[in-house]
Amino acid sequence: MLDTIVPSKLYKYQSCEPYAFNNLQQRQLWFSKPENFNDPFDSDINFAITEVTEQNMRSLFDTLRESVPDKNAFDSTYTQGGQINDRFREGVVLFARRATNTVKENKWKRLGIACFSEESDNILMWSHYANGHQGFCLEFDTSFPPFKPVKRKTLLRVNYPETNSYPSLSLKDIPHNLPSLVETQLGTKSFQWCYEKEWRIFLSNGNQAYPFDKAALTGIYFGCKMKDADKNTLTEILVDSPARLYQMQKSDTEFKVVAKEIFRHSLFH
Image (cartoon, rainbow, N blue to C red; front, side, top):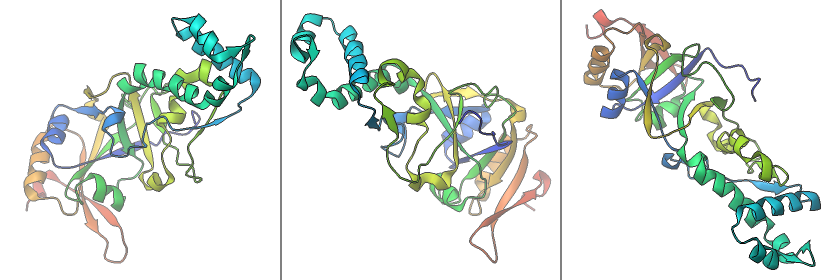
């Protein structure tokens, strides 16, 4: 996943809401916490446990034992004759989820995520995220921050497994590698969302705005049903921006929208 080539441009669909205009005015991106996403499965800790071997079970047992204050009570509950008992074995998946939930509460829940698409002409994205084509789409050059530098867990391409199954999580990984499993857990969505062709930027704290370089914004696409008043508002906000302006238009022959470049002086003439 880290070897995936980052597109030269990424796109963010927006509705014509005051918060969107304000973020653009301030040259900033909003990073939401995962709990605010519209898909209840998105960024949740969903997984299927694999490699439930005796060695991996012992490793999980030792890790959980270290985390409890009363180790004697833990031993009396989950061991017999110094060996892991059936109660622990039967609850191993529950324990695994408890361990991952601890990481979720301590780290992942605080994360901020900004979402982008590889495409500016996706009619479903225009319908779902730009208020039925009445909104706009921002075009970003990914050679600028916060897209660069690309570090581990900073910029990630979302994976949509065709099996539509939860990602597999090896029991052996749970005690030692949970903090590094963000790519698997936060970067996997149902195959039904594959039309989004999504990329994500992760930052340590969510529900905050982070600035972007003015030069990073290279284009603004007006939805084919966008109101003139909203176009005027955006044009005023972007008066000192080098970003190009485009009007999306319905194709005469296909189920698609196409972009036509427009110029500020002729926008309303």
